[in-house]
Length: 375
Image (cartoon, rainbow, N blue to C red):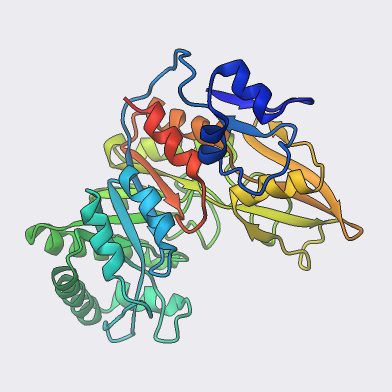
């Protein structure tokens, strides 16, 4: 069950009320170093003996960089069906640019835990920076595209990957069809050799949604040309935007409902954020920048500053405000309540599964919840 801390609660009183050992509550909710419980904090309690409503098992994936802390990778790996290794770039000539650090440990850990590792391809150039021109080149130049696909096939074979995840953003509207065809050409060659292809999609709510992030992304064509799609259903609250939930459930639902009109449910993975934002106030567009933090870190900040955690029922997301060094702050994050809402949404619409961006920050209660909630 999920228990929300009230005034006067302590670990001891909660443990006694529900018959759950304090050590288990501390471990599963990562309360180490947290001197007191924060009012409004959501705790996952297992072994209470209370009935629970299970959901159908979801396919689970998540992104990780090669420099992930080993304990974080090992903690997540048993819950994963797939591990997305971020990331390979490429040059204007179609040559691959591998990650600076070796990806072999991630590949080996994934297979050892029964998860399939996927090579993530992004339009990062030799300098490691995003290059929108690379998207245009690979969409339009068939010679470069062919060379890139050959190099990807060689790399997948050499390293032991199960497939490729194409994670491109800011596709030009004029490259909409060509980009989908590139994904299709990649998929055909990969499928012929026993590998699969997924593609990440910006969170659209209609086919004609304006904006450079959306206009070049054709849900129907990309759904047809990939084995599965990853909906990037997060970043409504973002670094340079006003304080709000990173992935409000009402907004996520709109994206899922539109996606289902264009793509079969058994091809869709719904994105879940494993991070939070801390905004200094007042917010001033163009100058205010939020600090990225972890979900466990967010609760510790609330506890250290005596803040009471609130829960927005529309967004199904927790938040709080606090004051430090004479500056007001507003924090939006994820907890087991918001994660459960997202898992139930994905299961309720019959989606293939969910995917996490990303696995680089601790959130043990999430993995325990996944194990507890699915049949």
